[in-house]
Image (cartoon, rainbow over all chains, first blue to last red; front, side, top):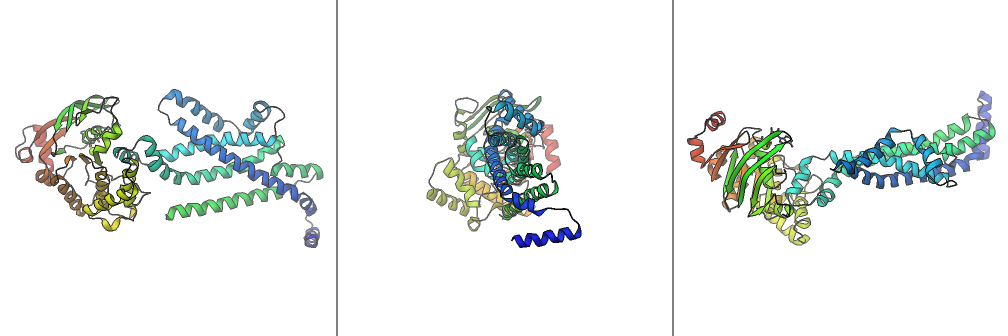
Length: 231
Length: 240
Ligand SMILES: Nc1ncnc2c1ncn2[C@@H]1O[C@H](COP(=O)(O)OP(=O)(O)O)[C@@H](O)[C@H]1O
Ligand SMILES: [Mg+2]
């Protein structure tokens, strides 16, 4: 392995490319650990975001405007302000001082994605033809039954592609955690840069890892979508 | 069976039903005709409260639908409805479409529900389609499944809102045939349709509706042969 890297390094040197592979090799364990944290934080964020988002989406669909109002403004706030600002507010103001940066990052990503999921959820339900609910009601089903057996099974299929996109966005956005020193992937890129005063090696590696993550996700999503289409 | 008293319905400022009163008797087949936009669908939809009632009363077997204490879901099982656009559940097979409300609403067990569903499919001539999805059916077949699904609740009344209007002409007959059979068996039916042949043959009474008002009603032969009101005459001269 080491020999292989040395050979490549030789080749880079002879063509005159100033690129130090040993930095990447040295930081690889940290990059991998950061990648795991990036994945974990994103999974936690999308999962909590989905649970919260369902709830907020339902709140937004309430008939009474007074019930609707807080949910509407929740969504407005989290979609209408920069994620970085939200992260600062949550990390430095909302969370108790001394709490972990990873916790702050998860909380921020969850609250933020909940706003987007709420909209996805609402749009999914709205996209189901009104005749479906009417037919179900005309058969004597109550509201909960109509949702559970008729509307949600159809809406959830349509929600999968946008939810997948939201997950990809969230995974990339988790890199903002580097700014509050949450030890995710980009954080270790910055650490390497700080130590060696080198830019290309760490950041290119980090970018490639993100790309691998998002491309595999896209691939999985396309596969799921195709499966749903043929059903 | 159904008693409508001074029913009014508005959408915002638009008054769609203006003071409608009519009694529909057990085993009667009432056909509602009238120009598009006259409020026929809205009228039917008020009979099972899919559309809220602005003013007046609808009684189904003596129970007032506008009474807050009325269990509307219970009433709806007694009043089946068939829509122009079929509204089958696309994520369920034909059999599941019929079985689902049986189990969920009537709380019948799976075996009983399936048995009843197969019997209904047999009745509408679609036994061989039990396990396919609605997507693969023709319009006429879809509508027959929709009728079977509504019948599955064992309703006392059936409402039909232009059940053949979305169908290719060659499929109209098969759906009307099922409806005729139902009428013969003594089902109480309110049918909005443009099929005048059906109205003549099956209807006990034809009601002409225009601009939210019941303009004229009579036996089919009388209403078609000898319309009294100018608006009825004008409408019939256009479509007959
Ligand atoms: N949900 C609704 N909101 C507002 N207006 C409606 C709604 N449903 C029907 N209308 C209006 O009510 C009138 C009667 O409609 P409808 O009952 O569908 O007539 P028909 O079935 O006789 O064609 C029309 O002018 C229609 O535009
Ligand atoms: Mg209509």
